[in-house]
Image 1: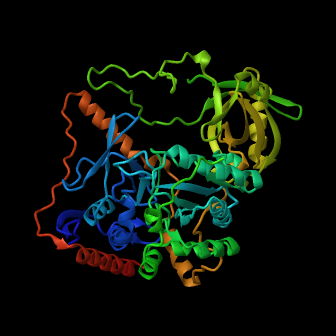
Image 2: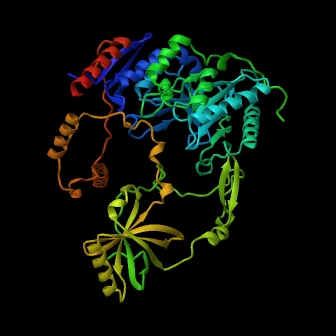
Image 3: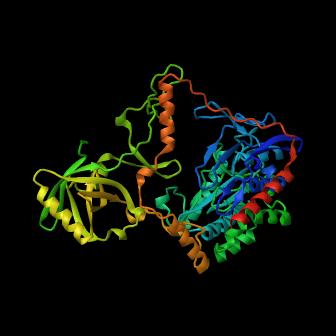
Length: 306
Length: 266
């Protein structure tokens, strides 16, 4: 007989897993059990990036070929040990209680909800107005693609180096790249926004045919859109190591700069395979968390950017 | 009979056919009103200025196009009106093509064209000629201030006009990932087997066989509620109290089971 639900023990917590054999990525035949297993195995490196943050869930209850929905308010049927982060909101509820994913049981619980994607803010629940990092969201307008994003990411890295700042890259897991500037020192979103806007506009002025800061899809054909506006207390970005609701089970994967250089030189053929869940786990086993400096490196923003 | 939504003439060569246009399809989505749960009164939408928090009268609202976060170009109604295509009353036929050349992805909305006063003869002629030539007319029409590309075809007794998407509105296949390329080839035997299965399931197109069951269920719910029956949402099922299993063991078993099943059906 087919078991539709099973109670499991995870680090001393009991929780009910449902429909484990349900295929969530039909093209890859990737089941919910495999999704939960991915999150279980990536937890050691992923949890530090989730801990203490309000997490927005994007859920695909019927798999990636069916509709998805965003869930900010942590589901009311949550187990009592899942903590929440209350955040004042301008929306229809005055306060939204986001899920906090601080430990393995909570991560397994949201994975069981088919929350394939976990999106986090740049600040923490305790200090929502203090960005821990600045982010550049690089989104290519076709026919530009991952390769053009890599070229732009390298230029952002150089522009930041000139300002004395180190940056780290990750694949969005879809078609773009994200560049993070660790801060981990007192800063405001006005400051991180000014930094990101300054760099983005500089690149746009140098090569208006390749880079744009205009968000409208129809005005960015063949260009890389550098979105600096993600540097806002309320905006969220896909968490590092989160799976994506793409046709194949891929994750938002941290990349070494030499890989970004390789991508910029050669293009994304077969390269996208590196973002597959099982490859990401292999990478983590080999290299550990190459994104850890984003949480640790202290880079106070000096005097205001000109 | 429904009201015509447009009247004008089809013109090609020296022939003009006066026609009236009716919508050919209607969506049957169930529409709900929004009510205030506490007193059941209707919810009104008002426009507020995000900065001042005051209601804004329509004359103070302009269209803005966001060019980058927080920066807008404003455009007035007059500027848009100056760009709008000339208001012609006609459908100008440009060329005749074969219907099968139009991929169905191009079809947007369909309308019936019916002869208007004095148009009977010319309408019948056009319909009959197109039917016999097995060709479809491609034309342009201005409706609601916008110019559309349309295809007009003879469908039994009536001319059907469909508005078409412009080529740049159709998403390019090149944007898709993961399509099997030339390198992925099924064997002849596999294709023959798949074709046999297709033949076994071959049937005429009978759309009336299919119904929107979700819509029917929603209507039934509404009817029952209206009739005064209490409708209680289904309570989520409780799990039977089984002793907890180790997470890794549960996942490994499930993955093995799924792999096994995939192998059997492959």
